[in-house]
Length: 420
Ligand code: ATP
Ligand code: MG
Image (tube, helix red, strand yellow):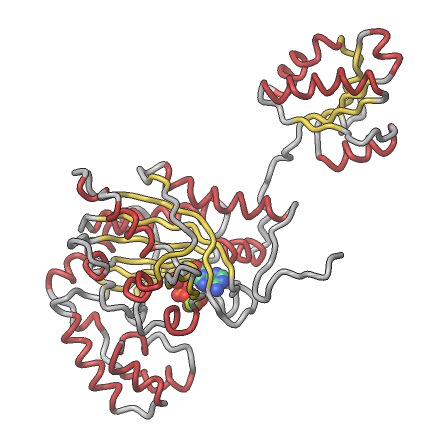
């Protein structure tokens, strides 16, 4: 063992568990790929100012959780704490919104970094798969994204999750509500930090997890009583579309994403088996974000799902993904000449798309068969000196132990037909 350990709040993904993470990423991405979303990858770090504006100066992410650093050249950068700001920045920079094909639909998958207090489900390096639909205001688009996330979770076999849904209004009705909420909050007994938050970002106070605060919020005004007619109609349409598609959700009038440019539809996926880190994913509309980072008005909607917490959700529901063994054939050469012959066969098998592995290091039969077993392969190919002389190879079916001699120059075709 080396003297080094993974940094605090991080962990390594190693086989065999890493296969589950890959499968989860793929399961979340599949419905997106199937629905017109194109893959986008952006740098792991950005100008710190992008996040300050694009995530919000008053958020925990920007004030406490960001990894910021100055380069030797004097640039102020931050490791990305989330994906939306970067994806929008990249789309604007590449003028994707001017190509005359809105919405621009993008999906991404990658690592994110937040300096948080590490605990189960909360890490300093974690992984998200996300989607953004940029440049269209259409309730069907909001519904689409919620449906695709629901489909992703269901395809993994998850069922113990709930979708919380709310509307945050728009620039017409939101300010009226904001003022009413501020009035209410200023009458409460709150600590200095929270009082400051009341001034800058009062909606975020609704999101305070502390029980003492939550108790005082019981009589707080609710946004749904302040929505303008256009926002009400929009939200009703999103709800109607979801109901028609058989996607169940709960109206949660207190669900907020407390940034000024988040608008209308807001949603969160929570899993009931995860304890306090129960949010597996979240998202919503952000009609004002593009302008906040210097772009044109581009109403948009998106979500990000956490891969780490989704894996924990699988564990909580006792779900083991059926992941086919990656190796189908394991080759066991006995001797120098056999090694050359079998190595050629393994290369050939791989070329025709059959997953094959090889016993390296000149192992004897016993150790090599152990390795074949561990690989999970359905077949072992054993080639000894007598086989060589006869021009055959022993094809062993691992489960039954049944063994057949097959001509060396027919083995690839034989395996192709057996493995279908
Ligand atoms: P929380 O309220 O738990 O801090 P959040 O609102 O900060 O979550 P988002 O910014 O909406 O989370 O990120 C979307 C998803 O990414 C979360 O639902 C979660 O699954 C995942 N996520 C966020 N932060 C972490 C973290 N520190 N460790 C692991 N997963 C995370
Ligand atoms: Mg957080």
